[in-house]
Length: 484
Image (cartoon, rainbow, N blue to C red):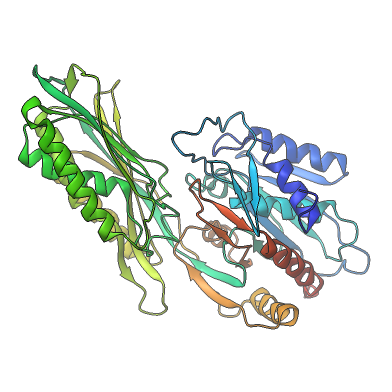
């Protein structure tokens, strides 16, 4: 990492990526941050949820400036390609540099939000950067429910301004975000015996682009779960077919890249199902010829199993999965931004409990619209006989038209780079939404270096933008106003 600039940031990013930090399992990262602060004589505190705050006094002559909070989340999305051997609870991320881009070997890179963490650490470690009082906050479990921000109590942070370092496009400043909630459906079934002389086969859809289920939901990328279900629906109507297993999708906040099902049909239909699959895959490849250039369809013979999902439940499940909304539901009437969406995130057959669990997530910048789309999803699954729960959800973040830190961010950006930045809202959940509830007077803006393919093994970081964001942070800190 020493050859990458700014070296102080990339050296800390390398350290962070050596520490396993799956969501809800950030204990080693918390310990690292505590040790980091202790070695430098910095004040550090950890709340009961596991959020970490490290405070650094102002440099000489800057003591009367407003206190700035720099905030990022310490956990990362743990996604890998199926064929890659990797244990996110033990292994260090293996990074690769290709030109101006950094990626990982077959896994998520962890730049979301490890690069934000690295910038905070570099700032805390530096002795040559002018700044007023700062609080560097590292929240836990952002990716699977914002539970760190949910659990933070008022008073943990004491700053006046918050810089959230968890956005993915350099030159863009985010000043609002969508709220969201998860909806889970559980289908109970009684296992049934599969008749003799049946052909067992495994269907796989893989190699899709995937991405963030909020930020990328409008980019016309295929959802692997939806594609697989399309074929299963047609096949259940055409053949005497049994559903033996289904394991599709991944995290609630990722567009599914891979989906798999094991089925059985009479041996006499063995060749017909192969023909159907080939024709189906050709049609879907044509539909997504622009956004899914690496899509792979596989049909392979599978060893026989004794039991399958009872027929009525299988039909209702597949019908509901086909019918349930996935993708953009509505666009904002005020700005060019997705307003409301839903993502069919994962489908899991759980053998121990004889049930199939379906997880979805809904987002909207308008609370009533989010309730509406959650109810739409809930109604579809309830009509199919599932037991459905809608999570508590998290709030959105409404733009502050009088934001002082936004004016500073825009002005200093233009001075540094000679161009106007974009000021936007984002169709994704940011912790700023929860902070705005707990700290109503907090002045916030979210920004960061350019990332692509987040929440997937294609995640990559545009290296030159890290230097741009780093230089801009330093200039912003110099321009923080005096306390009133």
